[in-house]
Image (cartoon, rainbow, N blue to C red):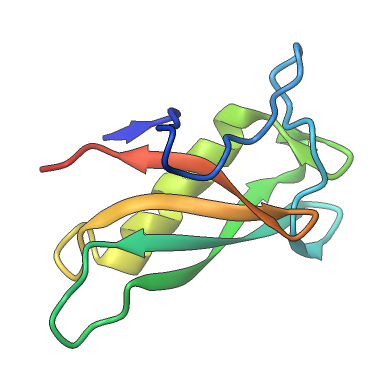
Length: 115
């Protein structure tokens, strides 16, 4: 289950404007007339020989963006889809949280409940 929360020991949450669009310039890797692709990192529960993070590409329909700034709901939907792909529905890795960068600094997009 995704939560849009921040604990004091993690990165700050993404700023959201009153109209519910992200209020920051995200780390965009691709911008087309139909989609916006945002770079993100999925932190996973440590596995014996596996990675502790996985790179994600969050694909957001341009219709759900204002310029280069997506609506928060669209960003969270893109996170859910990307995490499902990266973890194979939770069978490959146990997700912890998803981060993206704003001005080079990590910001929390979503945090997953502990199982």
